[in-house]
Image (cartoon, rainbow, N blue to C red; front, side, top):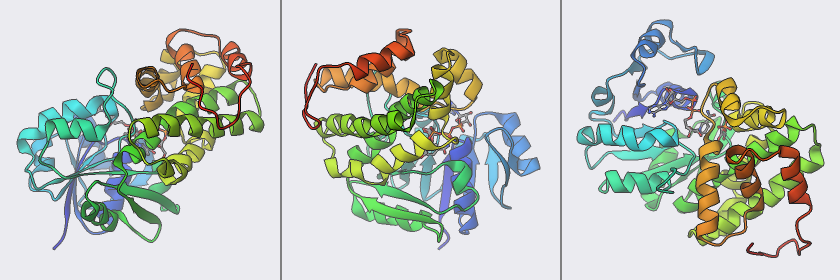
Length: 336
Ligand SMILES: NC(=O)C1=CN([C@@H]2O[C@H](COP(=O)(O)OP(=O)(O)OC[C@H]3O[C@@H](n4cnc5c(N)ncnc54)[C@H](O)[C@@H]3O)[C@@H](O)[C@H]2O)C=CC1
Ligand SMILES: O=C(CO)COP(=O)(O)O
């Protein structure tokens, strides 16, 4: 039987995945909150704002009607930024049946509640099966079939395999992992380090600096992750170091691009405006900073990025502070 998918969110990632799924022959409907934009996409067959120069396949229907998008679909793909997840789930919960599988692709930790997306979904839709699809995967490359690898993670391995089969193509290879916590945290926390890598580039620091940020960054991600119940091995996989590498090095990365602007002297608001797309790492920095304090995990890079974003700290002084911390063993976990 032909599978059906309702994609909630018509940004770059929702659009790229809707195209992939439609090209596999599934029935795909996509929801976006902006009505005019949905009309424009249906008529021009292109998402000019978020994924320009990629044609939408025939029969990929775009609308601003949430109920119609979700109704009777086997799978609901959540592709809105983290700060919008709770609202769209609350607006759609009355149309969602208990047998529909929720697949999340957002990468963030909610501010205030400090919840991961699976925890928000569990709160609002406790009966639904859940998976996260995450890994090094920029929409711009997936949309033109550049070889890409990701992970489908679910506590229920049957669901993880079902989602693996749903998305896999000869150019989009999907692995499975039962570690939802690790996969969610890896994808969310790497955005903070990507902001740092961008800041380093914006300051015209070198490859050495970026390698240091990435290596010390994954160390700090894994420390917090382990405290929160993740399997530490997950952070050496695609959704951990894999996604960290792509986000810290690619010009597709909105987090890295925002970081470059900040390194060049722009403030947080100016950087967000100039990038013009979601920069998840900015809100996630705040959540991770608070989580680090709450769980007594030393997160020096996250703390300095928090200072730069939220306390107006000077970027060069932040790097100096990181470089001139007390001497320590590379693998030592010192709580500050
Ligand atoms: N673009 C990419 O290559 C990838 C993105 N992601 C993640 O996917 C999620 C979505 O990002 P993108 O599609 O890239 O963002 P985007 O910036 O391309 O588009 C965001 C979309 O969400 C909508 N939106 C914003 N706030 C909303 C709200 N409160 N309620 C409903 N809709 C809202 C916007 O109108 C827009 O359609 C993010 O968590 C991102 O980290 C994950 C992997 C790859
Ligand atoms: O998660 C991503 C690629 O895997 C996208 O990263 P950005 O949000 O920084 O563009």
